[in-house]
Length: 455
Image (cartoon, rainbow, N blue to C red; front, top):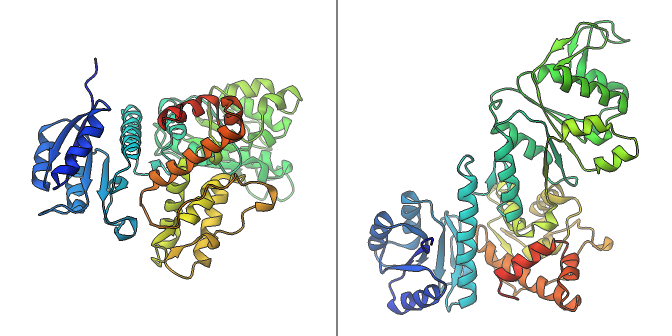
């Protein structure tokens, strides 16, 4: 029988510690208590603590300093508790805290936060055996939802191999970032990564771009030029939108896979290449094969290992993390945006994002330009396709302002619970229909009902 996780509760008020102990012991956790920072650090050093709940205001050593020292000792999740509300916290200082709970406590909120963080740490620990997960994702991919953790696990498994990988997903979902992550974690990471947008190159030029040409091969070929495959030798070539590639070029790609060599246009001398091929598409290649638009033999050679990237609407819990990522990326130079209103965050989470992460990035860039103050408000979120029905029914939040890096998980969970309840009511509590309304799988809905105790 596995040992229950140990949780450290740090608060100078004995009544608060007792309340948290009672709540968490009922959930099967073992509890350590500390009334000050030094006592807390001694417990962390000597015991297998899995998570810490820290009061923002404790004597001698404040919560900010304690979090830093706890995280230096052990990389465990930390929840901040405070009676002072979100608007009072300097979120830039609270690096390392993953959630925030205000007094008086919502018992269910505490249970959910602890369970969610421990479960996520468990999944991340499994993945981190070979791949180090960063603060907001992996190798430039932003997201820590269960859907993205599964993607990271697949990346981890395939990266050390030389197998061909086919990445599928809607436009803007991050297929090239996924390909770059695979390359970065492979033995080829110090070699070239060459990206080719197959749909952006005219058919008449695609062959010469991929395979190169000799001087005089055609009008205008004044000197010999290597193709993308030669440039990617010993490294990785990423063929984006492979489904748009013409059939005659597909045949040559198949030859590269089989013979490990290319022939420049105007030359009969093959050139040996050692290249790993990662391809991506937003179309159904199996259907394209049936329609004779894509070679079946090439499809199976490219699809040795398949990774599907979920659309943003199926991993809404990552939207706040992506918003903060883009705000920090584009507003950092001027230090312009320091907070985001909860109404703005609600508007972003409710939208279905047909353009996925790329569309979200563009919307945030526009919002930064429109914002006149250091708070991003709902009316700064413009350019969304409201007239095309890309919104879910809105879930109303109380009108608060959330500083950057604040209780994102709390905001998302409140929205998610209300969305699930509305979908269940509209579907007359038919789970399959509710899952369809929410555009998630029935299994995902089942897991969320269990997580939020909505069964």
